[in-house]
Length: 401
Image (cartoon, rainbow, N blue to C red; front, side):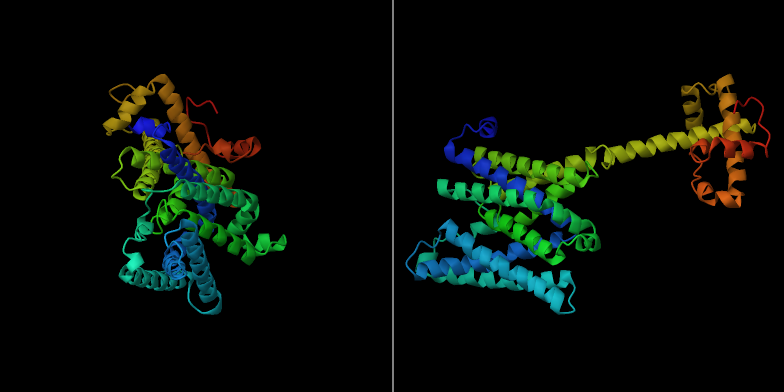
């Protein structure tokens, strides 16, 4: 069943939902990257919660004028207006009062969401609101999604993604250096507003699939996941889009293969699974890579200390050190140095003395600051400088400089 869902064999509607969720995930991942780089991820939370009053008011207004209250286009329009008001409220509180941005976000989030809950309660008392099903927009629901609804979500996600790609360079410039961006003639505030507008668009489009509470996760988790794999901005937003798209597609497929599973939470859990795998397995920033790097450094320290002990005729008590030296062919099982081990030990002692001389030279203070016991001195001084240091010390026996 799952394989059929992943290969789009469960019918037209299920396939359309999966593709729409994938486009939404790509748009959310790419757009969320610029919030992440700007260190304003929490803004997405305020925007998402600010959509709820708009949903309620849109339903009430359409019903009052004899329309279909549950029309998705109408609900999304209302949520967009409400989210825009919430965003403007955050901007006004941040720039016109002494409130910090996080305080302004908390105030707007709580007030708008509280007002939205009140409206939902009022709607439930209306005769036409008893079967409104608006609570599904809190966590998302694709059950009963019409072809027009899925197309609206897919097209909205694609347009938002296109706009984000067009504006990505000024958004990157503002995210990293506001002063430089302003010197280049960019309006920092206009770029910020454009970024927030794109986040608002993703939030509104994703209401039906993920819901206003969980859309925040789809905006934040993919960029954080992508950051584990690269240090380059262009790759971060690209990978964030890939992770977001895969999460949307796989989550929608899993939900379609088991009808009782809600789509939004499954998409978020799929995104979180990618985050956990990246946290553990990413080559440079992952936990496994960090553990392996630490173990490799630990081995180098043991070998270095063992070589220095052998060079000074001291016994080696640490069995792990002896095993490492034996594995490298530098010592026997009893801790006695081999011929290569004696040469390496003498060179290690020579390097220690070289570093001591270097650290006593006032004009080499910056180079001496690089000493960590592991770094070869040849990597921080020139050949002439090394020769000058060697004139002040004698080479230990068995050393070939």
